[in-house]
Image (tube, rainbow over all chains, first blue to last red; front, side):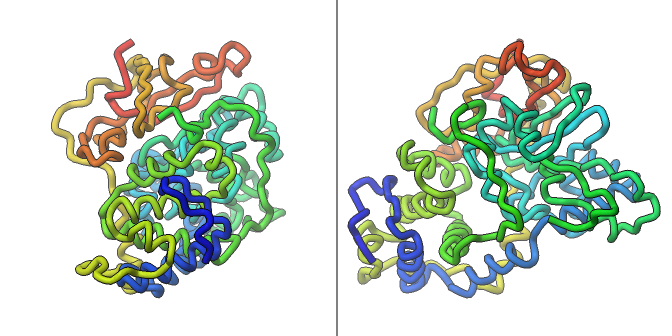
Length: 210
Length: 219
């Protein structure tokens, strides 16, 4: 590895080639007995294959089909998602906010990248970008238009800035024409973007999951 | 600190660029950087607030130039040195020096599911009633600490309404600096868009911000 990008200030370390730097750091920590590489594999596998927006979609579909569950979700989302087996890292404290014809909710973290991992997995690059973090609070309607969502002027927009250890889940509106669908079919209509608030749930004809 | 990480309300960062069918990670090194941060965090030698503060200390121009996981990697490297897990010389050479770090047991792969399921709850038992109730008017204090804070610049000095009380939570401003958890009530405060951004903002829009009691004054 190169040492040309090391300097005296350890806060000022820009990896010239991050791939090499990470490989070197991992092997150093393994050599020192601080890291078990199999644990790294397990962490990556969990977020690539087990924990993702399909979890949040299950919560939303349950809330759409079970009015008592929906009430519990809106009153205490941490407990309600635990009923379905979700919680833990970056979802220790969760609040669900409901979209209605009168209110559209949008979630952001202006200070870093806070995101409800157990329900949505790891955040996409755009959610962590300066462009989204800076504009979501000052120009939510412009941001939503960029995502193809034109929110009616009479609909209020509530932006939730995740400045603490509370993570927010948007409960999207249930699409029309879905009254005879099962919970599982409904879950397939719920997109990651709808649960952040930059999208809406799919209509039943265009079922598919992002 | 009044850092570049505190981005709410800034202009000039261009359009948002969603990527269709985005993978969870774009490169293998990002996977390893993510997992290293989590696995080293499992030792409990630092906390999420200290971890955020370490990344805030990266010089502003570098923060903007670096990718997300590059910032994570730089933050982790700083924490590892500061807390004695590795030395600068070891980081530079990639080789362990003799006599290094005995007594630490690496997070075993078998413990990863429990580690994820446990998380790190930041709520604490209440020892006194909260100062405000939902519906009461408050004003965010005009604080400008040089250290870590989760009071965004765009709400400082602005008036809002307590929307709900989340409970009692660890206070980042002390916790990030290892000066104790100082738990205190955490409120969701509703700020009208026009209070924050002026008359051009939509009249009915609002921003909800989670703020600790020490960030607030009575209005």
